[in-house]
Length: 208
Image (cartoon, rainbow, N blue to C red; front, side, top):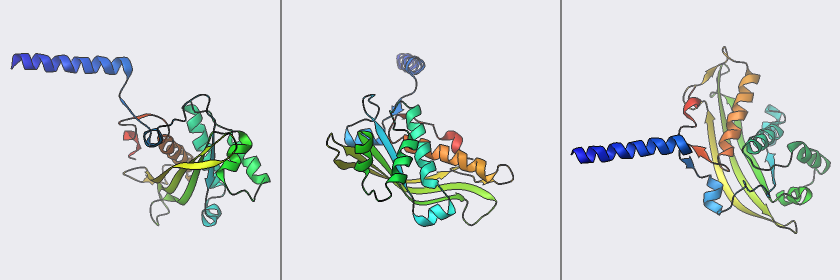
């Protein structure tokens, strides 16, 4: 019994030392696990584009541009080489009839194009006007673009994201503009985890 206790104690110490030296074990990104590829290679360039239904754009003007900008910035912070979203926006504005993600990839010499297809987006809890709780339903697609500018959709993930995760936020404590910025930041982080490592417990502070 003592030997077993000493052995377990030694194992615990080894785990603690390993944790201190190397940090907590990370979770492999969904994209990497499913495709066997990675966007983190410094030689790879990535573009992000977002689509939103007309009714969402009426309710949340420029929501497509905002989501693309936040996600692009988040991926860039995590060592993924991004095409600047302003360049993509300018090109899209000049080419309103564009249809395929690979057109953007070919224009900017991007290796991958992330398509964010918003199905629903809201900032309030149900029909309440005084409680904030952001909700997004979306599809995340990745198109791989070859040297000739042809693209192939290699990845799709459905996303249903709610923040705060447990308790809505009162409008008496925070303005809608401030909450929208915070929610877009959390949404970009959640989408980012599809493409870069994260850790267990990263969402602990998202409850309220």
